[in-house]
Image (cartoon, rainbow, N blue to C red):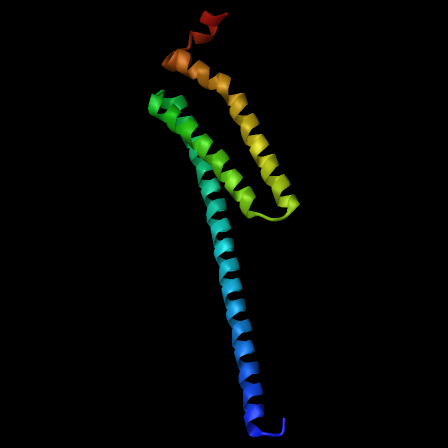
Length: 137
């Protein structure tokens, strides 16, 4: 390394390797940021769908319109799909367990509400009649 040319070549190699590492880190960080943003958007979507699910259920209980029941079922299916997508994005086992627990609770909640929705479909506004309870017994 006695010549200036060899020293400049070494400096060029160090600079190229440094820029290469810097470029790799920038790409990696942007990918990680994109995945974090995607996870946050998916979590917000799940929260929004959960609220919409309850809203459509309540709208059906008040107005007895088939479109509300259809939206309720569609939102439920979309919610299950979004939970599966979120699980695929998350890496840790504890997060997978949390998603599985949420999904199980959602499925249990939906199963518990199914008979009630059937009653609302069958009897409609008659449920609010003051004599309804006596007619069933």
